[in-house]
Amino acid sequence: MVGCDHAGFPLKALLVRHLREPRFPLLDVGTRNRRAVDYPDYAVRIGRAIQEGRAELGIMVCGSGAGASIAANKLRGIRAALCHDHFTAHQAREDDDANVLCLGARVIGESLAKELVEAFVRARFSGKARHRRRLAKVLALEPRGRVAT
Picture 1 (cartoon, one colour):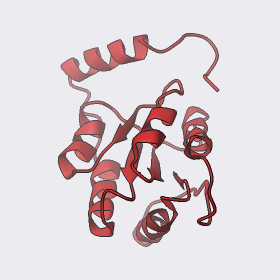
Picture 2 (cartoon, helix red, strand yellow):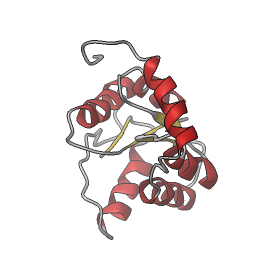
Picture 3 (cartoon, helix red, strand yellow):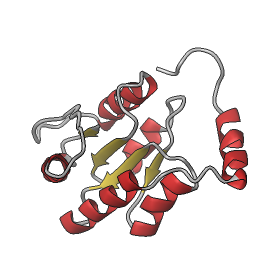
Picture 4 (tube, one colour):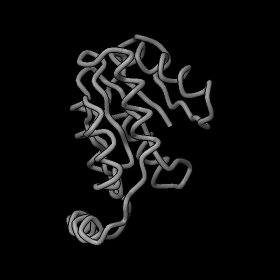
C-alpha cells in the first residue's frame, strides 16, 4: 500500500513502478497528481487499510516524511517510522514491528528511496523476547476501545 501528498507524488510514482515490477501486490491510495492536498488524509487511508486487514504494510511519502509519520501514528495499531537510512528502515521492522514506512521526498533521492523500501518490505519482526516486551509497552500506550479515526 502506498500513498502520498502532492510533495511526495513524483517519488511515490517512481516507487509504484519499482514495486510493481518485481513482485509486490500494491494498492495505491493516492494522490495521483501534484495538486496540493493534505498529507493526513492519505496517512489515514493507509492506516485504515492496515487496521481493516486490506494491507499488511504501508509506504507514505510527503515532503519531509515527518508530517505523514505524525499523522499515521495517531491511528491505533499503526507504527509508522520515518526512515532516511538503510539501517533504520530495516530495524524499524525487525525490532519495532513498524507497519508504515514514511519517506521525505525532499530529503532523499530516488535510489535511496528504492533501497529503503526494499529493506523495509523484506525485513520481518524478529519476535525476540525483548522486542515483544517493548512492543507490548508501546501498544499499552494506545487508547482502548474503538479504532481511532
